[in-house]
Length: 171
Image: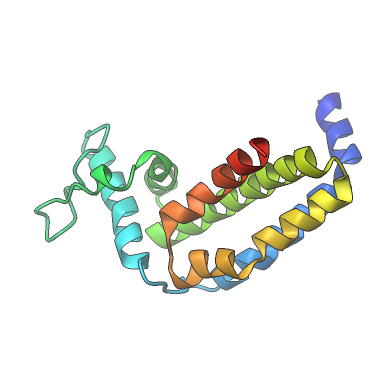
């Protein structure tokens, strides 16, 4: 407990910046519904389908049985479902709807994204303030906002922190 307390005190500025950056990115999601992007229906249906499959005892989910008028769709061949288990489990455990589960999932992903990008920028610049500025600049960039809200490109949204980490660590 003492380690956690000292960590929070030592990094309160970074944590405060992270909180406000993620909050700013999440503002469109703070309304009742989602901002409907290009692929929102497909990805939300995938999350709901994974949740339905787990509820019926199917694990791992290879064919999303509730898609395409209950004929099923093997979207797992093109889009891995690994990260979709978290929002699907939120639906099952807390009995929330798919939109709320996605919003919680997006918040968690954005928090981890800030952390990963900040650590990668810190590795690159070796200076805290430059790393914070670079992280904010990337997270609030046009490409990130369009990916999350206009295009609703879930795979790209999930890949961003890992792409940044691999590019910076290999420079």
